[in-house]
Structures are given as structure tokens and as C-alpha cells.
Image 1 (cartoon, rainbow, N blue to C red):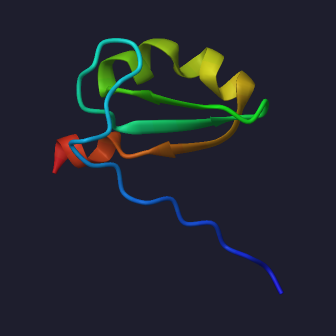
Image 2 (cartoon, rainbow, N blue to C red; image 1 turned 90 degrees about the vertical axis):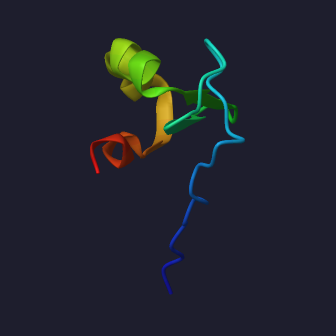
Length: 65
């Protein structure tokens, strides 16, 4: 049996660790930590984040709806 991990949707309570704006990306690190980023900082650091991430929950598409 395969377990599916479903991350809870990010809300207005979730804040960017860089600037404090609403977070639209959650990065689960291989080291076990978690970081959250607004769309701006997620885009600015995307390449580096993909190198250190175990999993990325990207909800930046919600801004285009």
C-alpha cells in the first residue's frame, strides 16, 4: 500500500521566512526542517531550494487565478 502525503493548503497565517509576506511555497528540507516563502522569494531562490528540498509545496499558481 502506498501512502500519499497531502500538505495542508497554505493560508494567510503562513508567512514568508524571508520578509513576512504571505507564503505560497513550503519547502521541506532533506535535513528535516521547513521553510516558507512568498512568491517573490520563492522565485528568487528556486534553483537553490530544489537542491536542498525533500519536497516542495508550490501554491504560487493561486496568484494567477
